[in-house]
Image 1 (tube, rainbow, N blue to C red):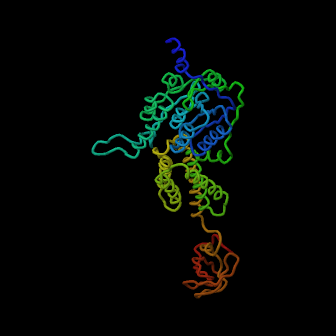
Image 2 (cartoon, helix red, strand yellow; image 1 turned 45 degrees about the vertical axis):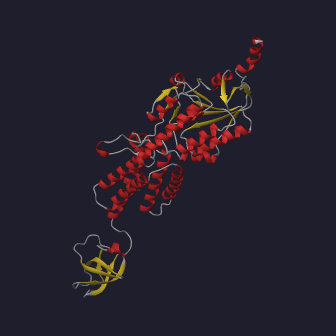
Image 3 (cartoon, rainbow, N blue to C red; image 1 turned 60 degrees about the vertical axis):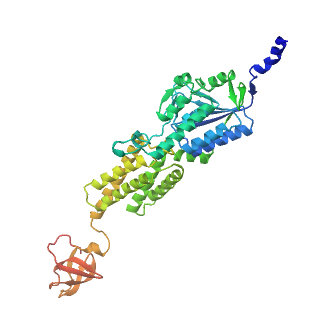
Length: 444
C-alpha cells in the first residue's frame, strides 16, 4: 500500500517537464545610448516577436547608459513580454554600463561575451561626483532630490534582480557604489547566466539550458530557427544619432557659430542656413534629452562675448571669457543625473569642439575688426580727406573739382581759384573744404 501510494505521488513530486519553444529568433542590436529612439525600437521588436509567435528575442547590447525614463519603458516591456528576452552583452569589449546593467538583469537569460563588462550604474553628476554629494561640515546638507532619485534606482534594480533570481546584493552595489565586473566575475557572482564567445556559441549553450518563463520551465529549440533581424526605421536612426549628448552639443555649437558668422557678415547665406539647420536638430535633441538652462545660457553668453570682442578693446579678455563660458556651459548642459546618466565627453568632444569654434570665432573677430578700421571706400563720406582744385574762388562759397566731379563747396577762409583744397566734411550735397596741406593724393 505504501509503495503504491509513493508511486502515485511520484509524478506530482518530480519536476515538471520543460516546455519546448520553437519558432523564429528575432534579433535586435543596440549600440549606443538608451534613449527614446532605442526604447521605441526595442519595444516594437518585443511586440512584433510576440505577435509572430517567435521562440525568443535576442538583444545584443553595448551601451554606456542612457535616460532613466527610456530604461524604465524598456524593462516594463521586457517584464511583460510574450516571448523570452535574451540579453547578450557583445561583442568582446562591449559594456552594459549604467542603464545597460538594469536591462541585462531584466533579461530572461543574461549572457556576456568574454572581455565585456557590466555595472557602474550609479548616476554621476558634473565632475564625476555623486549627485547626492557628501554631508558637508558646517550645516551644509546633501542634495535630497538626487538622493531620492538614487534610492528609487536602488529599489528599481533590486526588484528586477529579485524577479529574475539574480544577485540582489551586487545589483544594489552597482547603483550605490558604482561597482563593475567583467563577464567571468559576473558569472561567478550570479549576475548573469552564461558566458559565450559569439552568437553561435550562445545559441548552442541555450539548447541544453532550462530557464523560467512566465513561472514555467522552458527550453529553446533554436537549432534550425529562422533569424529575423529587426532594423530601426530611418527616423529612428536619425533620432538615435542626434540624441547623443556629444552630437547634440556639437550641433548646438555649430548652429550658434553659423548664425554668429551670418550676423557679422550678412549676405553669406550658407553659414546662416547651415547654422539654422544645426540649431533645429539640436533643439529636437533637447526636446528628448533632459538639459540644464544654466548650461544653455552659459553657452549663449560665450557666443555673446565673442561678438563683444569685435566692438570692445579688451586685448582678448572677452574672447577668453567666451571660451570659458562655452566649456563650462557645455559640461553642464546635459548634467541631469536624476534623469539621465549621459553627459558630454569633456576632453574627447567638448574641448576640440570649443577649440574649433574659438578658431572660427577668432577669424571672424579679426576680419570684422579689420574691416571696421579700414577707411570707407564708397559713398560721400569716403571723400573726406581727398584733395582737389578750386574751380572758382571760394569766399566763402564756390565750386571745386574733386574725384572727377564738380562740387559746390564752402570754406571758412577765402581760397583763390586754382588753389588746391582738401575736403574736411560733407553737408548734404555741399563740401566743406580748406586749403590743402600737401599736394599728395590729389583726387582730380
